[in-house]
Image 1 (cartoon, helix red, strand yellow):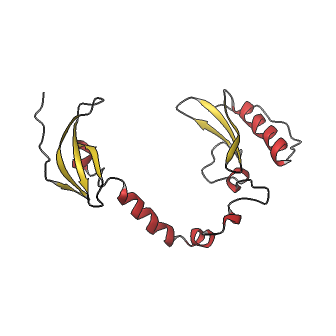
Image 2 (cartoon, helix red, strand yellow):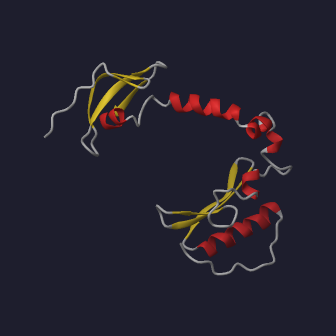
Image 3 (cartoon, one colour):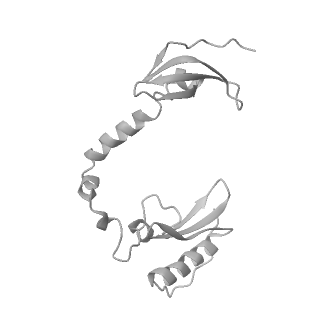
Length: 166
């Protein structure tokens, strides 16, 4: 068993180590209770502190994100304009327009590597009217298209081809 490195009273970013808090049950690393400059206390793995991965209780990320938001002219343009986030029927624009992150090629259909399943989603008025997993991409696409027809009035005449599985 290796000797624990005492981090008490050391500063790591916005965190100052208060005391040893026990070992992480998953990897046996020393855990440390830290006081953040913002006033919050948090427990952090010693390896994450020493490597610089964890620098705050989470407030640093929030602060940086809020500053970046105001530097994004498109975001600033949409601020306070909720009409731009939904169409006239209350359908989220993200539900009807393809994102650059979309890898399936079909809006509202994605692959979950962890479960090995395809998901079909459709959200209307902040509620999922479709959120279900399928074994194949073809089943997910068909479910999404059926939901589009029922909830959005979109009817597609083209048949879903058997898609290649990931």
